[in-house]
Length: 81
Image 1 (tube, one colour):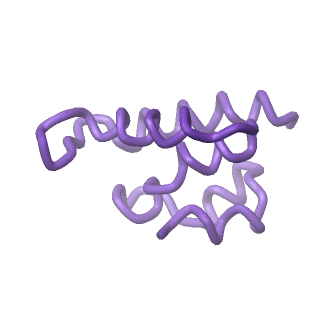
Image 2 (cartoon, helix red, strand yellow):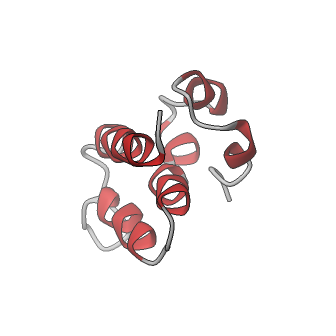
């Protein structure tokens, strides 16, 4: 997949994975991911930004599952912080 397709897939995964989650002030958690992504420059950076809390905060995704979806293992080290 090209970088644009991967980014669109990352947005969909993050939106679905964080559905119903709220941040500390009661806003949809996905908006946090969107704000982080907006601060990035490249499609790869934005992809990582959208996915950065999917493993840590949802319990429904693992680094291996993301890799199975085609996301690079090199980026997986940045999916959690």
